[in-house]
Structure formats: C-alpha cells, structure tokens
Image (cartoon, rainbow, N blue to C red):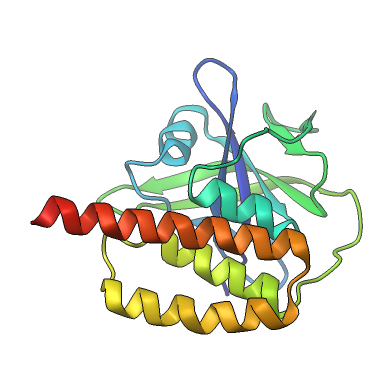
Length: 194
C-alpha cells in the first residue's frame, strides 16, 4: 500500500527540504520503502545523511504546492526526537526513520528504512473528494514529462468536476494553482518540442 504524505530531510547547509512522497508501507505502518528519483533532493539528502521524517497530513495544499515547487512559506518545524531531522508542526503524525539500504541500480531508487520514532500531534481530519482529486492532480503534475498530455488534460477535467462540487475556497484555489502549473508546463513542453 502507498501512503501519500510529506518527507523532510536535511540539506547539506542544514536547511530543510520538504517533498511529497508516497512510500510503500505495510498495514501496521512499521516498514517504509521510499522510491525517489535519483535526481531528487530527497534522494541526495537520504543518501548523504541516512535520516528523514515522513509525515501523514491532511493539509493537501502543502502536498500539492511542494509537488510543483510552489510552497511559498515553509511551515513551522520542530526538532525530531530520535534523529537529526525536522518535524512539520502541523502534521497529524510523523515517522522518524533511518536508511537501512539503498538500491540505486535504477533511475527510481529503492530506499529501505527502519523506524526510530513515531509521533502524534493531532487527529487526522480526513479527506473529502475534492482533496483526493487535488492529490491526484498534484501527482499528475509531477509526471508531465512522461505522460500523454491529452490524457492528462482529460483526467484534470474529470477531477475539476469533483473539486467544483465538493471543495472549500482554499482547496479550490489549490486546484487552480495546479491547473495553471499543468497548463503552463504542457505549453512549455509543446514549445520546446517544436
């Protein structure tokens, strides 16, 4: 099973990298397998430091904005308990981990981890259909370089209907940001391929 959330890692200058991540987990949430691309900052940081924090959050806007590189303000961060890392203060739960092994023989690496500490800050509010649609749109936005643009546009149109029916104002704005990003990126891809 894959759980979507956010992963924090420390950059070489001790600043914090926040990235959306969907590790493969077991149902007991005791085993996390991360699969970042080798070109990602998360991969580079995990390879160097061997530590990170995975966050379960209902703040879909933060997941979406980090996915497309448009998180304008870094959230409040707390010190991790058992590792050198940072915890997003508004997360529901967090999982501090250490890297056990890295298989970087393919472009998409497999990083096996061992949990060192699990924390709870607040109850999980839950998602509604709009927030699930925003999450799907954000995932599409990160794969524009490998997906068919017509298929992406069709999926975004379907997701937009759900957002229009069930979103609050904040979530509707987040979806609009993703739509603009996708539209601009597709236009750039087309311009560069001409």
